[in-house]
Image (cartoon, rainbow, N blue to C red; front, side):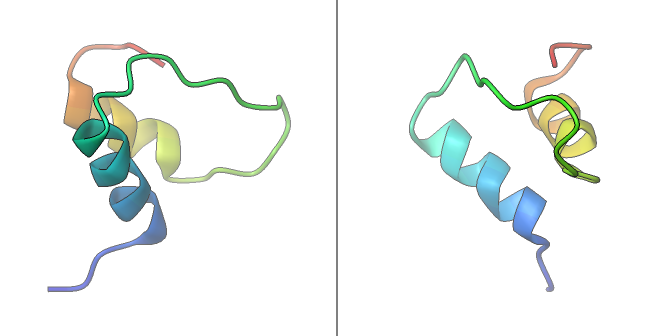
Amino acid sequence: MEITGAELFVKALKAESVTTLFAYPGVVVVDLPKDIQRAYGGDRY
């Protein structure tokens, strides 16, 4: 099974019980918002 960097990052966030994430606007994070939404459910991003 291949895993993307975004999926790996989200797994690490969940493993550390992260509830808040700050990011710079305009930075390219193509799959990250989608994977966070999928992992945490809802529209929290």
